[in-house]
Image (tube, rainbow, N blue to C red; front, side):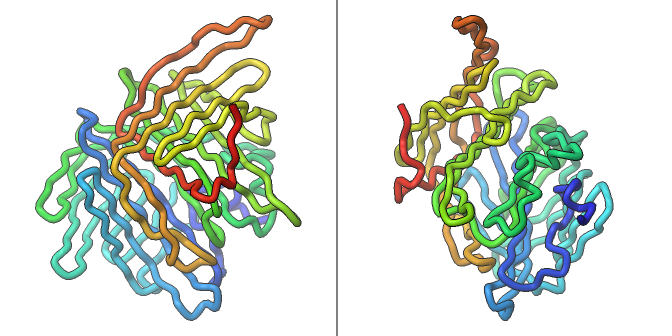
Amino acid sequence: MSLRIWNPATYQGGRISRRYFEGWYFKQVDSEGRRALAVIPGVSYSEDGKSKHAFVQIMSGKGVVHYFTYPIEAFSCDSGDPFVIRIGENTFSKGGMQLRLQDGDVRVNGELRFGVWSPWPVSALSPGIMGWYRFVPAMETYHGVLSMDHEVLGAIDVDGDIIGFDGGRGYVEKDWGRSFPSSWIWAQSNHFGRPGVSVTVSVAKVPWMTGAFIGTIAGLLLDGTLYRFTTYTGAKLVCMDTQANAAHLVFRDRRFELELVIEGRETLMLKAPVLGAMEGRDAESLGGTIEVTLRALRGGATSVVFEGTGRQAGVEVMNDLDELGSTR
């Protein structure tokens, strides 16, 4: 088994050249919690392998979305740890990113430096956020959380709009495989009323053998402790209600309960993979909120461990087909 399975940050595609995508999601928010910028580098190979390219997708909280396309040969990666990927003149690593993007009149330039990452733990039997499911071959999508929270320094110029990130916070995750799920909920924020708090959540319809199941992953990083609520740890999704760009979720295990009230803002359309080709659509909003309540469960009684509202949340509620159902 390849060692890269225990290093989710690095490129997972190996020699695959058809029906495959891989993308890294870098989200950063300024120190005042007013401006957000998502940068998504990646690669795309169509089902027949004839259409292939590298890309850098940009999304800002002011409504700017742009998809910069590069020949696949412009992509390269270092397989070691820490990882480094390059697309044209653009570089992404644990230490930061350098952007030199131009497409017609659209230009994005700048440099960011990152502090120490806070990754989802990796162990021999649980190589990241997917737990033992990461060992299952040929899943539709694999997911990794590379940093729940880290410091950001620097600035990015988005078409003349300079966003300063000194003292800001960053978050990094990634996806790879064939396609995004047919239905999913995703949300993330690490801008609460105080430092040291970050939350990420994903609920998705997961194809499995001859059917499918609803897979759940939620994590709350609180003062250095990661509270995990996942399908593979036995946590249950005991409440789920979705509306347009909003969701109410409650996860519970034997010791804790995590309640999330998610509300997006104006959605922007990103490109998303379908059988490797970036032909699908992903409605995401920056600037949303996540109300978080963590409760301890002891002897039939509950007590609040943490309450707070995360700002500048990334929010995706893709459940138009109602495949995720509802639980109240």
